[in-house]
Amino acid sequence: MKPPPFGYHAPGTVGEALDALAAVPDGKVLAGGQSLIPLLNMRLAAPSDLVDINRVGELDTLHVGEAGVRVGALARHARVERSAEAAAVQPLLGQALRHVAHPVIRNRGTVVGSLAHADPAAEMPAVLAVLGGTVEAASARGRRTIASAEFFAGPLESALRPGELAVSAFFPAAPPRTGTAFAETARRHGDYALAGVAAVVTLDGDLRVRAARAGYLGVAATPLVLDLTAAAGPDGDWRAAAAHVRGRIDPEPDIHAGAGYRRHLTGVLTERALRAAAGRALQGTGARGTGAQRKAGD
Image (cartoon, rainbow, N blue to C red; front, top):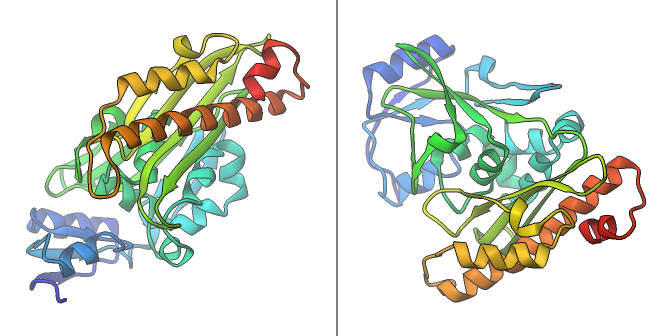
């Protein structure tokens, strides 16, 4: 299959890219192309122009600091996945990226491109949402920072405006005594998940659950984030948290799975991911855990 005709722009700087986007407000940005090119070939998208940012070296960045991880628009999935520095500051990134498609696709696809594509079945939007991260957008008019809660507007729809370029995404660092985990189920390895969960659990000074939340993919029109602290309780009743989630979600059926199956699967994955995250939080404290502490980590 062939894409529809389009104009092509190959800027070498961010400024040139923004000028091109300002001139063609209905144009599309080409970075990794792992989502956009199939859409073009299937004639599901027909932009007037493509703005190829692969020559903009200043966007190929990965900055890790105490506050978190900032990923530039051209940082490939594989680079972020393999970064020991990023994993030390925010381990959920690497845990989730290992589930993204296949290694060949991760070598080309970009983290920020996945966010801008805003597929509710993709891993990176759920990770950004559960961490409360942000996306920095730039245009000829200036720059703005968009919170994850406002960035995902609908299926394949983000808050980016015509002429804007997502130049980076910021993933906050994990607080002390925090563990993370990612779990998903797909029909075949590398397929889009039937459902997936990104979990974050934080313990207090007594090693009881202070906060628990989860971000979901494949069960709503946008990444869904649920605060499960009250449902789990201070002793970490992950089974009760999973039951709470089953009662809160309303997934759509499709040719791959019915709504009831997806709801059940999401509960199973929730319990699994929360339990693993709590275990990692407990291990990070150096404690062996007894009583309620074991319940949070076992």
